[in-house]
Image (cartoon, rainbow, N blue to C red):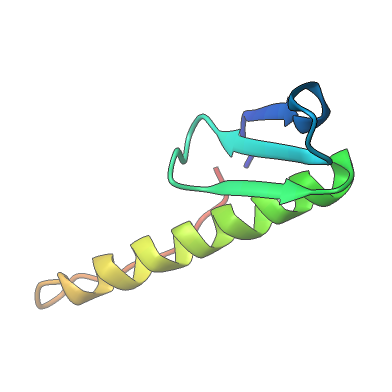
Length: 72
């Protein structure tokens, strides 16, 4: 799966590091001192969002239904 990252250079506001959000998962965000750290933090956040959504979906399954994770 590919995600779209909006990467923000915080040094333009006198801060250090980077902040990132994801177009496909707006509730996920990342931060880090380097671009790479920030993107890795965002990847972890997206993974947490997906795990949460799967957990919530599993709670609503009807008899005979199941979840299957596939590659998009």
